[in-house]
Every structure is written in structure tokens, then in C-alpha cells.
Amino acid sequence: MRIVQEVITISTRGHNDIQDLTPEVERRLEASGLKEGQALVFVQGSTAGVTTMEYEPGLVQDLPELLEKLVPSSRSYHHDETWGDANGFSHLRASLLGPSLMVPFAGGRLQLGTWQQIVLVDFDNRPRSRYVLLQFVGE
Image (cartoon, rainbow, N blue to C red; front, side, top):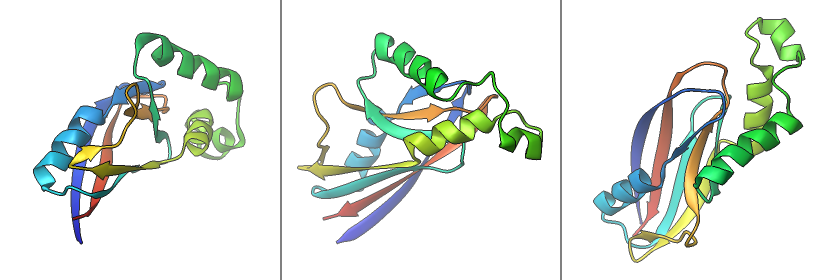
């Protein structure tokens, strides 16, 4: 068993910016030489999340609209009162989505469905540099 760790750096726009990580995760997996195992994808920070979705224009619009209904950016949160940064909504959205995802791989390929991509969603209220940690565990 081997463990290979990588870091992807991504510049985001914030405000529900959705970035498809799949091609880069696949490229890094191939470079690792591992054939069977699991890939952990983890974003550092408390205002972004990682999930899977069909990365297509309709859903790229639908997900932010859903999150705006669930956790409106227009209201004040206790976090905003504490820190004065007006991004309480981004922390709550990130908590709902979660910071990580585990994807199995076999034959050196991620075992994603046909229409399933790995995405990073940046919920913060400003552009950011995001660090996505990859950990491939396998043989």
C-alpha cells in the first residue's frame, strides 16, 4: 500500500463559484501510478466545499439558487456580528456541503458515474486562492 499526496491550487471568484476538479484529479491519479484504491479530495478552509454533480450549465445555476433559498446571503448571522465579515452564510453553506469526498479508483481510473464530476464550490463573499488536498491511497 502506498500513499501519494498532492495539492491543487485554484483561484476562485467566491459567491458560489463552482469549479470542476475532475480532470486535474484524474491527471494526478494517473501520475501517481496507483491502480486500485481510494482518492480523498479535501478543501482547506471553512467557506468552501467539495461534492459531486453533473457539471453542466443548468445545474451550475440550480445549485447556487437552491443554496440561496436554504441559507440566504441577504440576512445577518451571529457569525457576522462576531467577526464583522458578512460571510456567515458562506460558513453555513460549506458546513452543509462538507469539505471532503472519497472516490474509489480501479484500473487507475476514478470510479465516477458517466455524468458525475468532482466539484469545488467556493461560498465566500470574495475571490480566494483555494488549496485542495488530494490523498491517493492504494496499490
